[in-house]
Image (cartoon, rainbow, N blue to C red; front, side, top):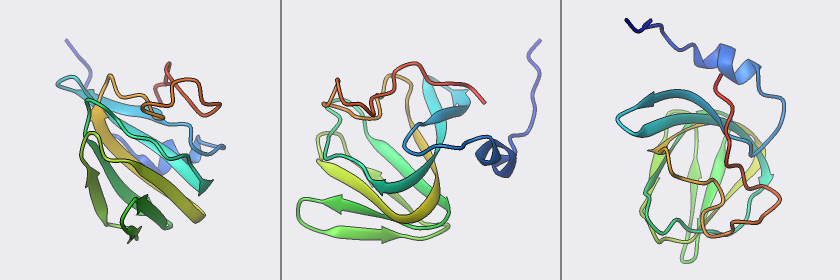
Length: 123
């Protein structure tokens, strides 16, 4: 029988000491609940087959799209449809929860970026 336990996001974020390096906080139905700290600029990229969901827990970040920029504050979220180019930018540290298929690679079409993470740590 599986052990069912609550996930304390504050505790999980407290274990993260770097930026742009997602960790797995939970899994369900082939999807992963990922958390990461954002600060600075990420790279322009897109995901060919996956939509992405971003929820700001604390801090703030900007989602740059080719035609606009959306500022996200705590409690706000955005869904980026597959195929849409985007670039997250965090002028200040942001704690972000992402929900996406387990197959999603953080850099999408940029497979050999120095920020590409394929074997994510489970917290």
